[in-house]
Length: 274
Image (cartoon, rainbow, N blue to C red):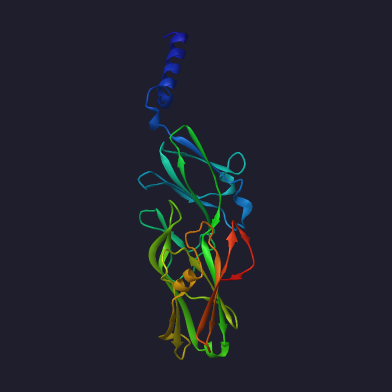
């Protein structure tokens, strides 16, 4: 075999190997999706991002933590995905959420308050050779402050918060139904605090229990319709950036006051009473 024939066969073999660019339908070839993180630093971040790509049928294409060493050409991450519309989700700060069986929902573990999660989601058209998406993060929890008036009277009681939504949909960050329960953290003699996940109804309740000799909850004494009170004061669980709120309970008067702290893309203004 002559040298020219050998070179020809080598070129032909290479062309056949590159089937995506020669013979096969280009729909079968991947799209190179670039996630741009240049604007992610606008919020306080303490962890590396976790990323999720869901296909048109909701199946997980890629889900993993991204370290700085995986970034390319500066603050960007490039991945090969099928040529279709892709649901992108980027999450910072997850500690107590686990993936659902289908891997399309993050579910908060039983008994935990919400993590301080900042997240981004977008539907990206990846039907061409390349696609790009810029990560724009938003706050996915509500910090609820509980203030007690007449604190001496509250000493023998145990507090819990209950709700009907404990999950985060990875396609749009909407609330997913599931049992939520957490014990507010004691912040001081007259104050407690808890981080709440996004809700989709007014079913949140603040439950107050009598305690036994060991300081553990025994029987339910009071139940406050926390979700109804928050909604009546204008709290909006559908906002991209969730606001914080506070509730004040006056033991002597049996009064409950709710305040909403408005947020505007990460800029906290003074609390206002509504």
